Amino acid sequence: MDEIEKIKIVLEEYKTLREEIYRRHAAFVQVCTVAGTTFVAIVGVAIVNKTLVGGAFMTLALLVLVTFAFLMHDHDTRLLAEQLAQIEKDINKRAGEDLLTWETTRGLLVIGYFDRMQRIWDRIVAGLSFNKDET
Image (cartoon, rainbow, N blue to C red; front, side):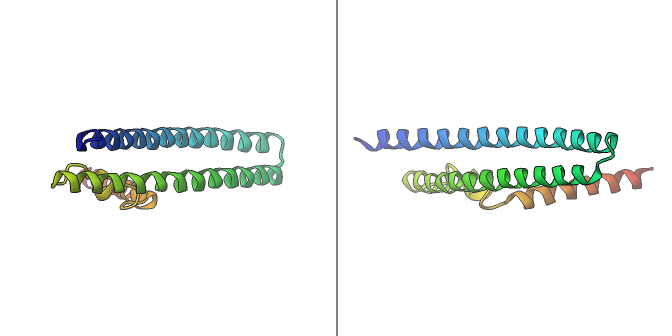
């Protein structure tokens, strides 16, 4: 097998792993959406039936399930990100220049979920403070 065929195979794996990360992210967003809807339903039922202890217990159970789902998602996605970073290094080494850089410069292993959430929060706060100064 010549070098070009090997590169094609590696790039196809790269593309497949990127798609897998995207699919996992989309699935986790759906989990969060369902969890949010379920939380609203739990609160509503707890208020209507005046069972705050039951509502608190159900909320705790929901939180445990979502946390477990997040930890599974995070672990698996980090494994995929590690493989992507290895592929990027391999391709860049073969090419003699940095052609693939996303995972090694901006990916999950470099900027984690909490860092991303902090950046979003900082933008929201900056936007709110900007609007206050404007009026």
